[in-house]
Length: 436
Image 1 (cartoon, rainbow, N blue to C red):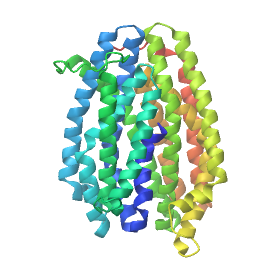
Image 2: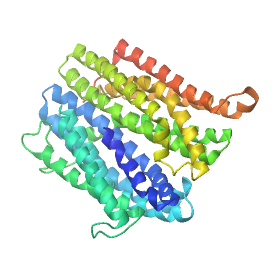
Image 3: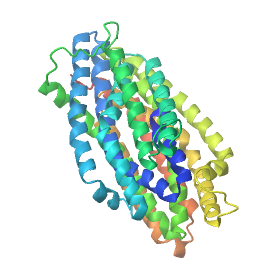
Image 4: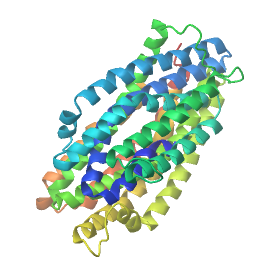
């Protein structure tokens, strides 16, 4: 799961030497591409719930059928979401703040990524199907392989090395699309083999309305859960400029949130494990096993996230400087480094709570209870965090609030949401959720 979040970060680090406009282009085009990724993640979670439940019931034919329908749905979504991003790339990039040279490069990056959206969708879904059948090894191999190939291709295509054409920012998009595509095809081969636990049977593929409806019904709340968090952190980006030094603060928060995202994706691995085991256990009517899997994964994730947090805290300043220039040469990067270090060293206090929340949310998704995580996240991040952030930002001068106050509120909301997830998991209504 960590490697799912690494593609865009690699692109950013590789295009950095081209100049600030290249970093801005990749960052802003990636923001536009976040919506398709979020929607695909919802389908992934829904398919894991349905496939793992039927797998646990030993209804293998239905598990296989659900896998096929998930790919058919994602193929349609790749066209429906990719075409508008390709056709209206300039308008969408302007919407997230692109201008000048950055706009030209962002348009190229977004159009290539949108045309190749199917490669991202297929690779994500292949790994979801494998995990739903209890196979975690091959998803890891696929994602590590795709990332290593992405590094090599992106360097070659951005800078024109090894007789490749020099494409600049567009080369980063091509590298990612090609790397994902090659390993997506390899992944499809893995799950079409007769020996695959959950098998993709492509003989006379046709849409089955009821299964697609179930995927949509379960997947939409899961997608919206991701949207809620994106909105919350977008609001933080908006309110933090009230404290002054807007450009440096924006850059610091963007870097800090990307590091947060890497930790979150790594933590989501425990959630993915919990989702698959919970779904299989409920299908086999082993309710106690399902509950224990959720608790164990949450505890292990909290420990891992704590370890990541300690590493981030110790190396906070160095991590911030990786995203910028030499702070001794350009003073604005010193501000970015200072602000980012402050943010990261407070944010990591909440990593253990975030780990518990992430894991139990995905465990609930694996049980088919996708509305509850949406409700809990909406309560914490929309109804509590955003109003609190607005109050602190608008009244910081008269009441003496600092940026640190804002970051501590984020930690407090993460802790509260984690407690709510613990209560919901302990009550156990999710054990009786009926899905087909």
